[in-house]
Length: 376
Image (cartoon, rainbow, N blue to C red):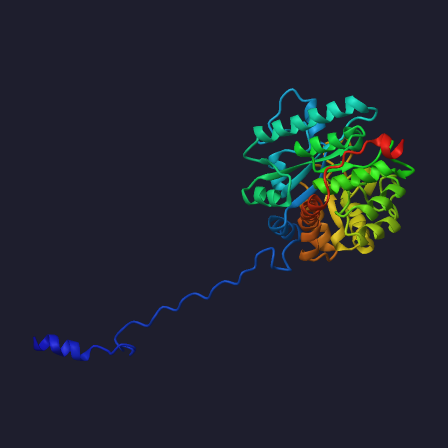
């Protein structure tokens, strides 16, 4: 017992060092966190992947629906070499949302155009349902975000051709109820080179009430000016670059770009050799120019893959967006500007369309006017 008491009495007090104990092993210093996203010295392509992982691409135009019509069989989740776009390549390219165009071959009008557009809508819904692990249909900004949070790529329906509504606001409402969210205003009697007729203006107002965005790519300057003036929601140009750099008919003049920027519209620059040039640097030049003239909140991306158009080098399919972002990083684009370019600006346009529709529906009943009443 005495021995035990002696041992207890000689035990070091709490907080005192025991001279007979071995020295403590020092803990390793925590390693600094140098992720590609935060490390300015990381390679541009590594930083591009990191930025896109946080701010994925909302691709403003895909011709995939029409391309799939001509395939007897396909599997977009496993990969499909006969097209430019499939789920594996979109994941490698960090695509978070995709606007699937419902455009038709030239020459389809009237009932044929309406029928073909309905078939396109049916095809897109079938494709989305048959690829549930990769794709999810979305009609609002919230649904696009939900799809991304669930690890799916959001599919937004549109743009469709103006011919699809066949001079009928009722057909516009039906198409909207089936999921249509973007309509191109060009190539009809009420949206021609001369501009929007009174019925065309009524179409824009009804689109605002429904939450359908106006696409002005390929529209005349007169249509663009009038649509920008009367639309309460942002307007889009889903496939337009800078005419000052490349004089393509669908590209926009600096005057129109400035007008679009002042109205908080959105110019989605296409990744096509015809409109922007043969290299990734040419595309970056157009993005620089649009940002300078219209502002960083007015510029976005439009892959235009599967549209039968040649693409610039290093941008051959939907997996190649990191190459473009790396080039922009090399030019000094900041992460906030890149976040607007890839994701934020398109989400803003979709949110604005939702808010505009909710407000308009409180003030305005569905329009029942017919083209003969206004333009007859």
